[in-house]
Image (cartoon, rainbow, N blue to C red; front, side, top):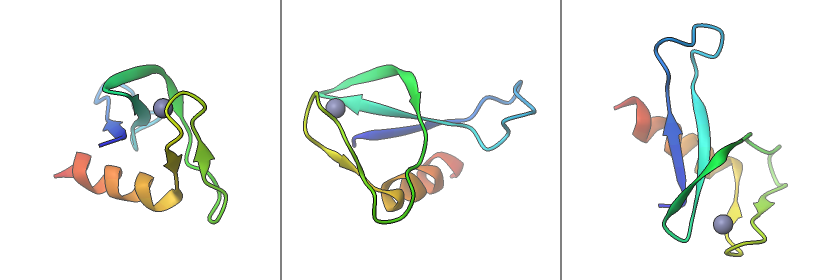
Length: 64
Ligand SMILES: [Zn+2]
């Protein structure tokens, strides 16, 4: 797993939650925003590509 979805029930403005990249097993403090389709984010730390589909999957995982 390279992406975590965290929802904050106290944050009503951002009820959809936040995404965080897990870089080499360490969850990064900075929030990652989903990229446009076809434009994956490439992490310079571990080289992983974060695509929009990964964000959708993480969202579904976090919602269950
Ligand atoms: Zn990384």
